[in-house]
Length: 302
Image (cartoon, rainbow, N blue to C red):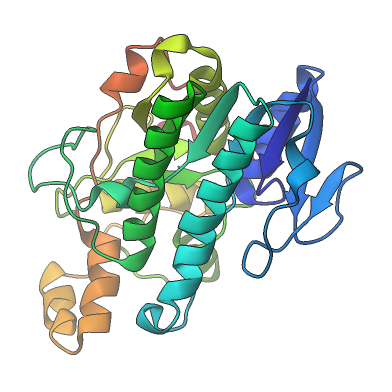
C-alpha cells in the first residue's frame, strides 16, 4: 500500500518524506510541480484533485495549505478557503471513496485561537481564531472530524507550535540571519512564554497519531514540553549563529512605544514578545516525548 503526502516539498513535508522512506514506504505525492517520481500534479488553488489520486493509498498525510501571504488577507479570503477548507474536504471525501484507512491533517495552533494569558493552552482551551488562516484551519478540522465519524476512516489532527529545524523559513530564520549579520536587537527578558518543537520531533508525532488507534477522531497539540521566553530563544540563536550573547538588551518600554505607531507594528512586536504557550500533555499521553529542545540547538538544527 501507498502513503500519500501533500506538501511534501515544504519544510515539514521534506522531513516527513525522509522518515517514510526510511521505513521503506511507497510514497505518492500531490504537488504543483512534478518534483518526485510518483507525483499527482495539481494546484489546489486552481484545480480539483483527480479521482485516481488515492488509488491503493493506505494513509494520507495532508500538509499542504495556504498561509503567510503578504497580501491583505481580507482580499484573498476566498483563496484561503479554497485551499485550506474546500481542497481538504475534497481530499478527505476522495479518501473515503478510495478506501483509505487513515487520514492525518497537519493543522495549526492558530486554529485554537490565542491561548489565555498566564497558561499553556491545551486542546480544550478553544477560542475563536483571530485571522482567516486560523479560521479556515479550524473549519477544516471540524469538517474532517465529521467525515471521519460518519465514514469510520481514522482521522487524526495535529496542531504544531512554532517549528524549527534545518532550512526553516519565516521569523526564526529572519532572527537567525539578523543576529548573524549584527542588526537584530538583543531582546529584553519579559518573562513571556512561547512553545516550540523541532521538525524531527513533529514528524515523529505525526507518525504516532497515524498509527495509534487512540488518536482516531482527536486533535493534538505538539510542543517539546518546555516553554521559552523570547530572550531565551534569542540567546539560543546567538549560539547557533556563533555570536556571543550581548549583556544588554533593548528596554521593553521602547517596544511598547513603537507599538503605538500602528496596528501593524503592534502586531509584529506581539509576535516577537507575546505569549504563545501550549501544552502537549494529550500527545504525551500517547507515549510521545520530544528528543530535542531549544537548549540542544546548534548549527545543524538550522
